[in-house]
Image 1: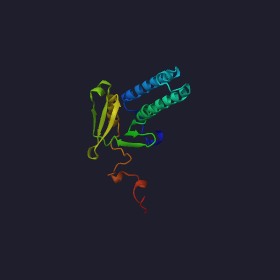
Image 2: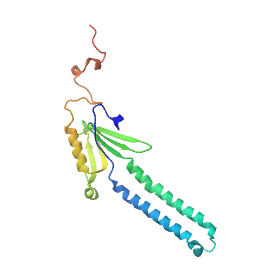
Image 3: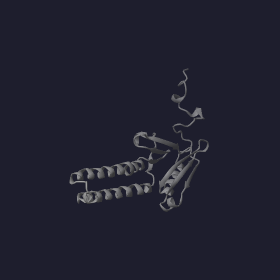
Image 4: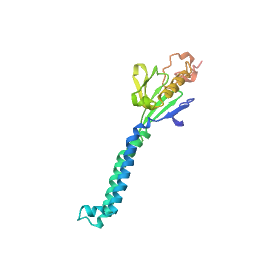
Length: 197
């Protein structure tokens, strides 16, 4: 993160989405693992031969292999995929910007300058209120609204944002801003350089 900071910018906090989205994937992974272990033990005891007479003992390794492969596909395709997706989302608050990063292999991100934020709102449903999470909306005026979804400890995060906005230097020049008072610029920044006399 240090390489991405502007001169004089500091990281205030980094967070991820609320982990409640991992409940079903983790329970599914535990359930599939348990079911696969039980099924493998059932196969080793010779129960398939009693159930279907034409299945012989030579089928045992193949049946166990199929059971393990199916369990592995469910765990990789559902549980691990959801955990990696959750882990790839980060919300970063710095002294000048809010940055949202999405994705591991294909990276998407957006950022909002704190100077552009006019209003910081919180939206919570009943489950989010119970877990102290919520969605933060950043009203930037003419360019629209940005939303940070499912932020944990949403009240504290909004407090950090408001504190950072209060700490912004008054009249400071940030990257990407339009300058209006050209007389205040140092000579080397003016177009054409210093007048030669």
